[in-house]
Length: 267
Image 1 (tube, helix red, strand yellow):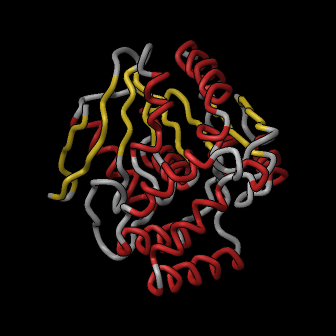
Image 2 (cartoon, one colour):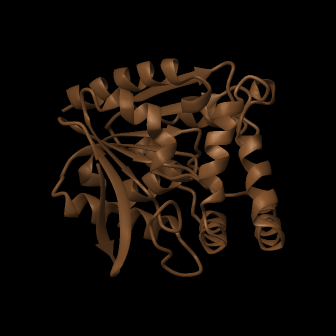
Image 3 (cartoon, one colour):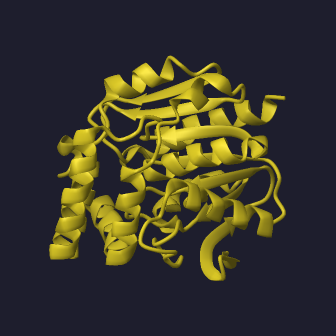
């Protein structure tokens, strides 16, 4: 079921599927709640799954020229308050992971667990910040070319010839993202603080999903972060890039289920 609520007097769109304990899905850059289609279908058999369109993505409004991770986290909190939900596990893909960490920082008492799905707790390096600004210029020059190339780069190079339908699916969602929404997210990601300290402080379970052929985040850096986590689960996808739930959906969903059971068994 597609639903809406208000944040700062603007519309936020989300899907609400299934019944039971609550799982929140946060998509990545250029995504929407629709990108989680197969994950929602699987998890909603036994959980209540809330998948949110983050600011400037999907059918959710833009809230300014910069969408900080904190603003996005507060938007997520507005949805959960609207639904009167108090405890949940958040699964964040890439940028959605940055938002999940901001949420963990701002609203720690609401989390039963956290999954960083091809995401990092580190801030952008100076070189990465320059890349974000180059991306802003590329979006202004030709949004269509930028989104197509960016989505293609999220898949492992060796999977490109096998996953044409999945690439087309993700590209279609990306093309629906407005220029303003893309640029606001790029600025927000560029300026986000590092939150790796959270990984070592919290006691609830944290899962990291890592792709061996990720073109965006070096697996070695993510494995290094995983060592900080006190109550950790690591899923290392040997054949995938930055899009494990599209590249290996069966394996990914199976391991997510194990993690969710762990989260809700944890006191």
